Image (tube, rainbow, N blue to C red; front, side, top):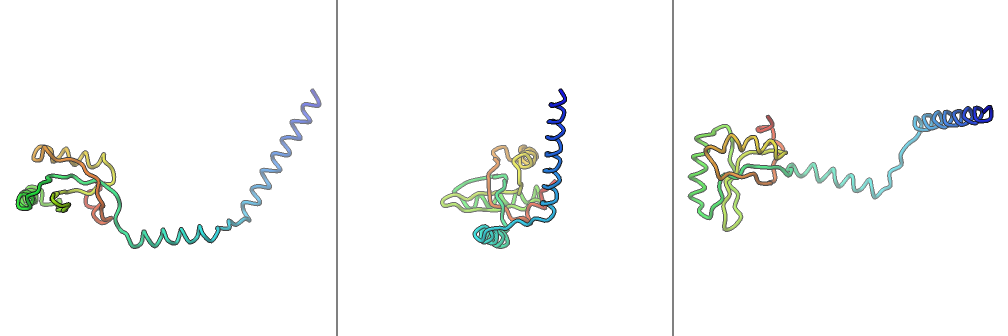
Length: 139
């Protein structure tokens, strides 16, 4: 029994000593980053400074091959919802009328519910979104 107590005491003393040593070393240590890692981090930083878009979600109100139909739908939407800007994207032969700018599908879904009465065929689509657009819809 006495032998077990001395072993436990010695073990606790060693663990405490290692803990104190680690705290001392952590307070005075530096992390040396390899040059390739530094280069990659610099490239990533420059890329993010140049590209102000993020992957997000929009509400697609209409997709058609008729440009005039998209323009009419755009004017109608802007009259009904003047506070929400629209975007017309062209992916030949289709024209897509979109609105909104959301980081999550949950926020896009909530906005879609507002529009569902007037635009029952509207759907959520993934898109490139400028960071300043997100401020309009972050509610």
